[in-house]
Image (cartoon, rainbow, N blue to C red; front, side, top):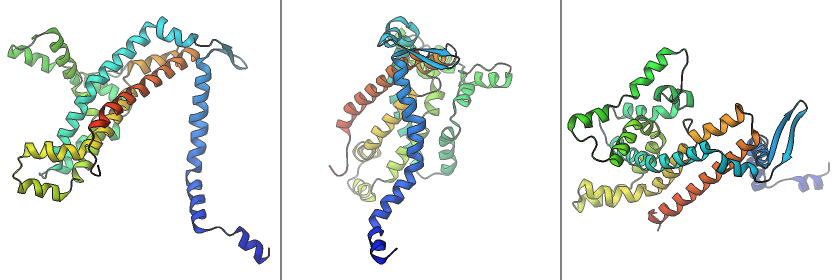
Length: 306
């Protein structure tokens, strides 16, 4: 190869960096296409067909929107589970955010054992698998495992309800009683789901400028004023991030009854067409919920550069 050809194929530094980047994400890109996009397309195709299992493979019989109609109007379990999931997400998400911000503010202060306390609240993120949460919360039925069953009963005792009844304030109204009971029964679930939001809020609190704290002290602001005028505006972008994360985490929870219904149709009943239609309806509901959340919360987010 002569000198002219060598100069012709010589790449610039910026071009080499681009090729290195493509090479770095190449394996991920192949995995995304093979294990995500292709199954996603097949799922969409299955949702419009009746999938028949034959010895030679799968046969498709075109049904149009029949599977979607059956999922919405002929399957009472799916619509009921979908409604219950939306209601549970609507009331549980604010509680998770409030609890996470409260704990993050506490963990941001200096006190003895702060590192241990941070590790304890972050522990569910490390072991937050479906079977572990199911056994601890009692949602997973364990056959032949008495120790797991006994362990799960530790978190199913209605201590709050008994305390309210002892104090004479149990049964103020049916709606309030039902709400308090639901919150009390899901305390462990709320704490379990707060690991990542606490971490994000803690990172936001540590990024509050020292000048803002000093200016608040000079002005004689109380702790309450500092929280509402300094802390909350600076962490508000992370409120949106945590809100999106919490909503998605709720929709993909292993205890979600709507997802259980879809997986049951796919694995036990082997009805791929109807299960795929339900999955796409569920996906549309998740996108709509996220769109509403982002649209509603984005208006009140404070950005330092605004």
